[in-house]
Image (cartoon, rainbow, N blue to C red):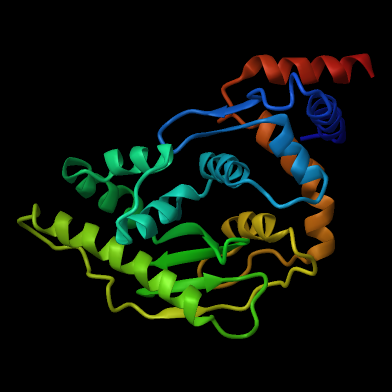
Length: 267
């Protein structure tokens, strides 16, 4: 990824986002499973220091998953939401319907084995308090649920702890159902695994939590930070994040990439 790629992607997004006709067209298409789409308006929010749509986190997460992150599974943002809604008896959105299909009995064993337990860690971006993104890591080696919150006050609030406990209980239900189909070795029950918060860099604004989640996925290995960063570096990373999402191999819209390359050639 060169500075020219980053600048051209920025110009492309700014141009389309300023047009009512093109602001909401699809410029990033990450296909199923667990895919998502992004529009110029969504990507422009990254550049303009605005709160991030979950689709941006999903697209970047799948970009990371496509790279060498073989030790971790990265969930979509809508999967924890679905789990919490299902626990409350609410499943109405399109993504919830997709999730319900994915969690039917015939799919549960595959989900448990491939997403929860095939790797050492499963990362869940979670939306809390109607305005904030945090990262939950189910660490299958340490047998704990880790909490990474860029706006932490030093202790997990009871409301957030209850949400994590609900997610844990829903995952446990999947495991119990999967175990009912297994004759040999059973999958560990996670229902009593502790919920532990880990220290992380603090955000200094009210809008960067989504990018902090993306960097938790990228730089937290379940035991330590593999790279040190702060708010200033988060701010500086925004144009590059946009370019990485657009030019990622998981984005199947090659025409969009070619248009940006033409911008580079003209310059």
